[in-house]
Image (cartoon, rainbow, N blue to C red):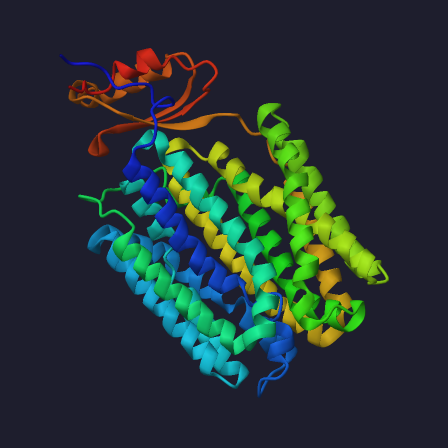
Length: 464
């Protein structure tokens, strides 16, 4: 007996999909942890390296963002040709080599080279493509959410673990530890990540060359790209000076800054959650987004004008990271809502590239400004950057609260592309349609509250 596929929103994830989600999140998180973990301690370490200047210290902190931005999209496209796992394994090997180079270097130039190599192991887009290969379309958002969450967790762990490891093994030891994390990533890729039977293009998760022009000309998406660039720019510039401010002005011991970051990150996460719920459930994303950018700018002003006492820094860091975490969660959601359904992967790829370019620019500019104008100059730079972002962000359109939906089409529906697109557009809850015959699917934007999935299922192949 033949039957139609069950509702895409109701099916449970299979054991293999769960395994893929957690193993790929593991690879993603161990690599990002290795990149983030020196942030809270590197400036103090860099001042002991031969040939250092404040600009070169900032460059060493952020240089991985440049190589990551340059290579992540090409590596993703290469994985379409030679397979996902070979690219992931190769990228992790490059990451390990970079970690070893940084660990063995006694000059700032050697560390810069090592950090650049760490970023050159640019496997982010390939990991997401493999996640798409290993999961059904209806669960892809859950998988991507799991991987995205792992980045935030890795960043929070890095702020706490970095100072502790610095006390125990020093920054050169931390670089050796990041090499070990890379080895752990290889082990996960070889023995925990399922191997897909084949790989194919997924327009909702991967970059597609023919979509570049449309995405880069979309002003709403460009606003969000500028937003993630500026957010990472300010964060990285701040961490060029925050280790020195906490140690020399606030009086926090070098190995004890984790005692500041741990409660700040935990409380900031708790404070963020209600705003995320309100934004999505009550459809208040834009006002919460604009408010968060404003609060982030307020935190930069407080960094500038406070007396930098322990209590003042604790409160300012809490304000900063509450707004930062909220924005970090909101920005990808806004990109997904605003991107056309068949260009979402390309939109996210350009967004991610902007993120890494912001890290590079923030490190380099933060170091240069620190060398010329000191701590205050960096916080003025951050305030100016957020003010520019706010001016651009206020013109953003309110997002439509729609979800992506990939519908596999039966042969008859594919053969009548125009007619199928028109009929799909007439179904309750379907707001956007793009039929791609060569992939055998239609990419939709739907309102889950009003979607008639029974009528949608009539377009899909029957299953035994």
